[in-house]
Length: 460
Image 1 (cartoon, rainbow, N blue to C red):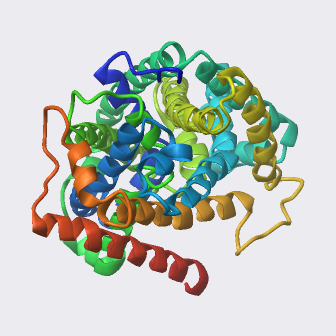
Image 2: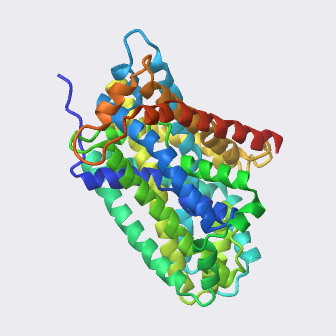
Image 3: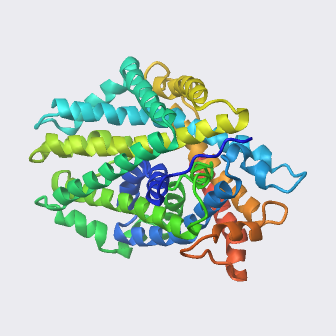
């Protein structure tokens, strides 16, 4: 007799953990940067529109695949595909996305935990300029032993939480982390918005100015909004489908997807309220890009703030929670791969995959020091791994989900909408025009993003 599948103890647990998977580093260091680059509030309006009309349907499809199959992506295709078809072969593609994502995410999560400790210890002091703060960051990158300790700590802590089970471990801890994350964000944002000189940053962020978007290029801005709406949700690798497999039929999935979108967007939006007023007040409106924003620009800003040590500590513990909730969610997916495919115990899946993820994380870590001369496609190992996931596996995986869930030679539109609309709440639209949009227009948009990603990478 097959062992009954664990379920979430509450609806809020499902929503918070699904949101925790979507909420991550991109909400904080990518979203504010591209908002600044492409015109502030005008860009945000377009981004929000694409998030709803583009990201939501794919998210609902992942949830529906998981709930209908009661399996991870490792076996969901076998449960839902037409007899004699070969959709199940795509599981290896989706599974690879989870592993490759963790090959660099664990390292960056370790950086955040290390910076929290540095702020608590008072390593960053008033008077340190951006060059001095940047030297601290470069010193960390040059120390493979130090980074290894924090990377391994991240892997051990997050797999330990998963080993305690869905309810006692993943749900219990993730709910607390998410609650702390949201409270900390609001506190830091209020402080940032009250800074002398921060009003200009708020106006830039909240007052639409389409002239600034025009300066950046309308097409470039729209393309960037599409990309951010897509990548912020981590759709296409089954990372959300797994949580659909742990819920019942009480709620329709469109409403649940909207709840996750609202939380994800809230975190990204409030991140802007933290960063823009602070950077306009203390850094002339310069935010930096990617890691430099988090590990150089913002520490420099905190150093100049009253009680900067406190605000820096709170910011980096919030960032650590944001990263850890994503790692825990993906680790839970990886554990489900092992238990679904082999029938092994959770304990064995944790030990084996803990070793595998640790080994796989070393190339990224060593790419900043011992293997710093290794350049792939014009970037370091982290850049290459990120490109593989963000510009290839996520969009292609989403197209696979779309085709599988809407076409007769896959699971099919009727089966999908029947599953999505079980229960009460907001209904997923089923009209012919909307069906055409989901079945053909969205895949075309994703393929467009994929092609533009290649263009930017190879022909910029």
